[in-house]
Image 1 (cartoon, each protein chain N blue to C red):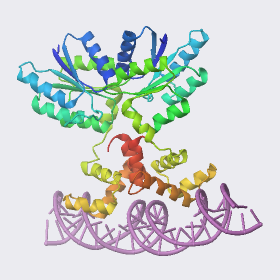
Image 2 (image 1 turned 180 degrees about the vertical axis):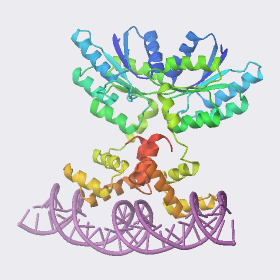
Image 3 (image 1 turned 90 degrees about the vertical axis):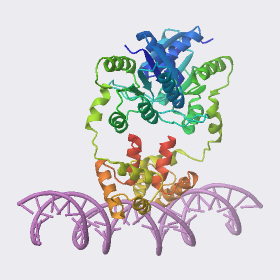
Image 4 (image 1 turned 120 degrees about the vertical axis):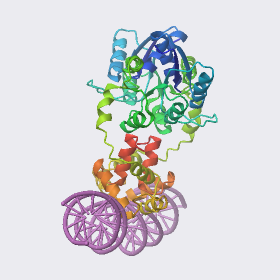
Length: 221
Length: 221
DNA sequence: CTACTTTTTACGGAAAACCGTAAGGAACTT
DNA sequence: AAGTTCCTTACGGTTTTCCGTAAAAAGTAG
């Protein structure tokens, strides 16, 4: 079984609970940290000392801190860890279960498991750890598995960028300008409009305000 | 010290951690539940059995569940508990630290403490429990105390209703219509516009989309 | 190369939002 | 009762969004 586990979680009561849980269920050395930067350092140090971690369990969102901190999200952390130690297994443990984000984590970062914090997450976490140790499969909290699959990839990065721009108060023509400068394929005001219409149809939004509200609720932006 | 504590928290790892913590630090009977409805039942039952709780620690947001459930938020639960047993002390323990909501909890529901889940929340929770047991003071996580005080009450319920209407895709004239039907003081399109301008100025928003995005981020709507 | 499809862009009119100004009323002062 | 202030409502002009149509460009197949 896994012998050296790193837990990255900023909320102390969760960290406390999960650590206790891991120690009770597995015969592994469990280290934990509340800071992403520190997590990456620990991973590096462990490699250097020839006693690398073989499992990382990390949250995705971290509260801001007074500390000087480079890495601010679990997503970034995962990317950097994979660069450092590509075969290190990673489980994301988060409340933020927005299909879009979860899909991204599996697709781009090749994480090994996603456990949604919730009423039944302890069992799931144990299951996930067992599964990814014994097999090459990935674990997804059952309540999410469906929505991940059905989540279409019709929404691309430019769509999200467009929504983000709208949400910070830019007008369509300003966004067109920005897109033109960034040399995106479609940058005309007309195309912005068209893209917007596609999104409004897709999310069944009455108008742009509604659209931004919906996508914000979904965690898309 | 408190002798009977009820913990209402749906995320199992937090519940697990906090329960362990409470048992280690206090000589109290600690009960816990993951459902608001069940929490209210437990409170009622304890009163009936003449062994009422003397402290409730509750989360504010709960994930949806398959269960038939009447109470869906911690806020509702707090209201109902206070109705049942007005002098029962209540601490909200939540990540949702939006000034507006926190202020509401203290002002309308007279909660005794608000501890923000975070890197230092275990200590704060202990402190809060000690404080509200020994004194009549309320506890607020230090990092929040400032923003609560400075949070103005210039924003009224109609403002929030207006924002909510916008966020579900209504036009200004539709909102005017609704306000007129509901006999709100100010319902003309002109007043809606004026109200909107006030809000945009207050939140430094470029346009309505921006405004809705900002207030959504703040948890105002 | 040409015909056809798809994508991107352009344009124009209608609707809604935006913004300044001012009229109409209610409450309050003296 | 007249004057003042504050709040609500009205209105007109400009900008932006909204929506349909169509031209231009790019890509595809024979």
